[in-house]
Image (cartoon, rainbow, N blue to C red; front, side, top):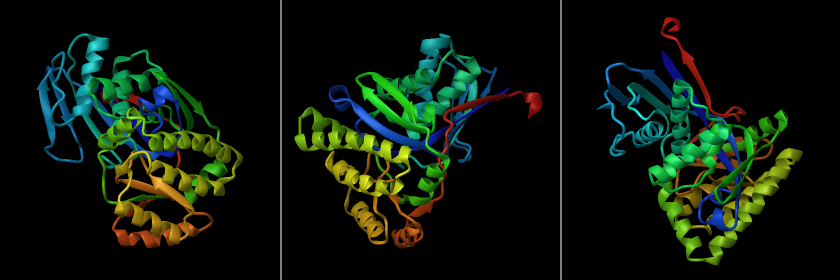
Length: 345
C-alpha cells in the first residue's frame, strides 16, 4: 500500500503579516491569498520492520532511519516530519508507527510561498489518509498550525496552513484563536487574466521568515505605532483586493500592491533590502504598476502586476538580476490524498 498527498503553495495577495500574533490577537487580521499549481508532495509506505525512514527522493543517499518510538527528537534534518509524527502518535495512535516517507516541494525553502507550512499540511494529510483520521479541513489546518508554531516553536502566522488545506482564492479573518476562511468565487476569466498579468519572479535569494516575523512581533509588543499603522492599512487592503477581484477590476490591483508594499516595509526593517528595492524599481520602470515580495520578506519570490502585455518587458528587464520568472496557474483545490494498493502499482 502506498499513500500519497499533495498540497498547493500560495501567493499572499494582500494583508500578509496581519495573521501573526500578537497583532491578530489585539486587532484581528485579514488576508487574501490564492493557491497556485506548485505543490508539496508526500509519499508514505507502511513498513512492518519497526523502523521509520525519512528521505528526499531528489537527493540520493539523503535520509534518516530510526527505530519506531513514541517520540522522535525534532533535531537535525526532517524536523517538520518528526514534529508531525510526534503529534500523530501523542494525539491519535498512542503507539509507535513504522513507515517510509519521502517528500518533495516544488519551491525551495525560504521562497516566500509558504513551503514549510504547506509541507506540514501535506505530511499530515498522508497520515490522515493512512490512519483514516476523522479530521475536516479546519481540523487539519489548525493541527498543522499547532505542530509548527506550538510543538516546534517556529515563528510565523496562520494563513499558510489554511491556504494549503482549503485551496483556491480565500479571504481569511483571524480573530484571536479563531480563523474564518471565506472562499471567493472568482470568475475563471478574471483568474486567468490575473495569472497572465501577475509576473512571479524568483530573486535567486532566500530568507529566514522566522527572524523577520520575530522583529515584526517585537514591534507590536513595543507598541511601535509606525508598524501597527502599517499592518492596519494592510488589513484594509485585503478588503480592497477582495472587491476588485470579485468585480473584475483587475488593473486596480497594481496600485493596491504598490501601496501595500510601502506599508509592508514599515512592519520590520528586514522586510526589504537594497537588492529587493532595486528589483522592484526596475520592474516598475519596465511597466509594472505594483508588486510585493511574497511571504515575510527578505528574499525569495516577488510578484508584479503587469497590465496588458507589459509582462514580457518586465520579465526581460528582470533577467539581468540573475533570477527566474516562473509560469504558473491558480488552482482551486487544496489538500488532496489518495491510496494505491500494491497490486495496482
